[in-house]
Image (cartoon, rainbow, N blue to C red; front, side, top):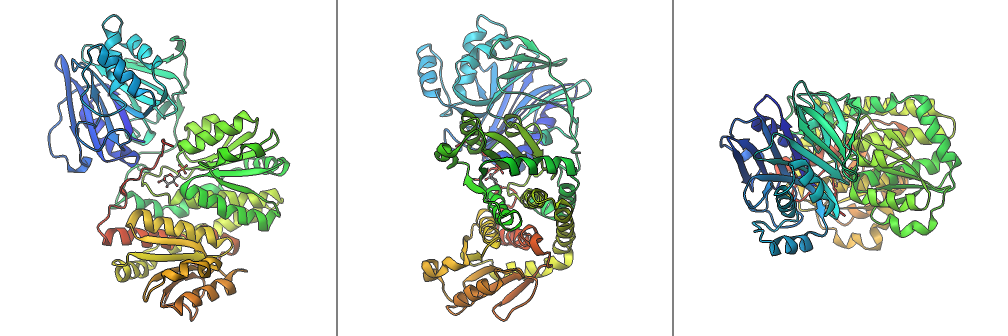
Length: 585
Ligand code: G6P
């Protein structure tokens, strides 16, 4: 994971890097660091704390790099924070990815007299560059160092006596921002969106050299290449917290707009995808985390609307299904970040079998988008909070519309999502929040919860449990209502909160019976439903949007998790041990 950034230009680079890192913190936030050109040497600072805790001063400079870490190799400590420096302290490197052969490289470099000062895989890169820099110019040294690396990398490097900032990538993201007389390198666009919307997405094994403008090279041949700049649609306001205390609550509140942006997809685009689904022999939805729950939800909707069976597989498990894949299979990877390593590995497996890849992704230019034969961009806008909220509902909305498109009823599907957007506005209003805050205040000392649903609401129950777990650290067990009696019911105690998703559909009678069985054993039943019921100890009213309920029923629980986290003293934007873009397997 980790966020990396580099800047070269007339402004104060330290400030730009520090602000950019704050925007990249969603990628990892256990420690951070910065290196900058200062006088004739390099200034470097590393901290094993959150960026917000820093009160020191950074030097005025025009060339700098920075890093926000999610530890993989080496514990969380100042010595393991990036940037990593060469022995002479003249080369500094920040890295996102994993160097698989770092142990052997480390031994080799130590035998040549290099001294290491961290436990990370990254440090070998700084020493490799240093080794080559004895006889070669900086950019050539970087190219030669990269040749040794196995695994994934996005790196940004600077050298004390060179003006250039150099970046390169393979299997980890890196984008170049082209401003007016200034250039940026970063893991993701929000890091520099305040300064420019003009972006070049680096491809795998490509290198960018920032000096007066940006030059691009093919890492394998070393030859200069032409790259086109793209204008991104996001603006600085979308990527900032604005009046909100956290990104999470901002993004929950934006769901009316993100759903309307889903509806705004052109009919032709959605119909083309529907044709591909209809013509495929075997369709696989492949995803992780919340995106997996969106996929599972959609499989129920496809079953009901199109009478079609969709295989839904966790990306990390997908390679074990490779025997089912043919050239007529359609794989639909679903990912908000487009960088999830398990999803990328699944795509690789499918491609080997000649399977067509049609991805659904929120981040333009992401690795998944580039690796796919075609891609539907979600247009949810930037989501910076670590938890998926608006991207989750957009995924369910898009997949719902696709199901309707498959049976020639796209107009109906779009109408459903429009209604869901209205419902999202109501559910996130100040008035609706009052009840949710009251509930969170009542329950914030609880350590265990259940979350149940049936049919299309079963994945909603899983997603609800995930939200509560990952942000408020409450052990919330999600399962389908019918399964309670096969084991989990043994855990129920007096007063144990249980979320029950009960839309007005074919699951209603059965899920209410399941809720009653839990209530009879002492559970405190929180019904998420259009109508109240005697089973509920607390009723969270949601508008009835028919088959669109799978889009909106999660919204009150997103809010509940947020307020629960705050009341329990957890930072909603930085849940411990998690990151938004999971680039490790
Ligand atoms: C991380 C994020 C989740 C997300 C999951 C899958 O765990 O915190 O919010 O659902 O990765 O990510 P993807 O980008 O593939 O949707």
